[in-house]
Length: 234
Image 1: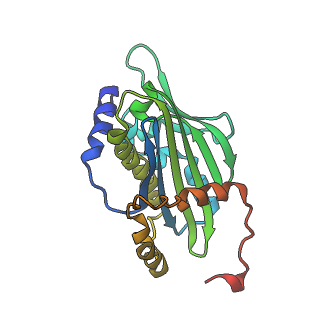
Image 2: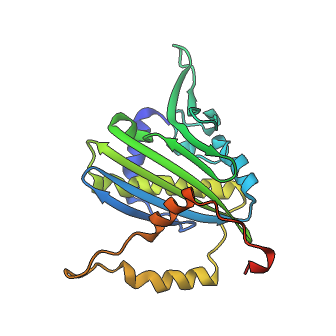
């Protein structure tokens, strides 16, 4: 889409409601930044997820492009590489946009990018998208964590939910390109219901609960867990 359309489209996202194909959450926010996280499971091996991840033209939404055509995306998945977009020649020559640059690439496991997407690009921000892939008995678990901080002319309370939806839309696009997100298992539903009371606001005498999801994400990056033996799978 055109530059003005990109800005308008992101601003309008705060009013949109999407089908819950993934689990999502604004983990944290302050006056200077915010963190959002999205998870999904797919019936695809980590190697297949990695292959698709390297082809953003197949899953990143054209509605969140500057050219209006997802075919113009490309990604060089080596450190220092570019997640970029070609801008068609409108009479003055070809243009291009850097959406993000690659900070960390571990095939089939982790891709980390630095980039403020959409209208955030025009602000004095640092933004990091960490994409994790974990093998599961049914395929792969995926997690997107997007951390944004610095100075911006948006109100965090307004922009964080909009960005949350944009990041969630990209994870849904990736899951759809891999055959669709798997529904949560009975155990996952039970665990989510069991954890629901912990989401209640703490009283004045209580410490706020730790954000276990973010802790787990960080732990995933420093631990090299051995794959479970066949008789340990459930």
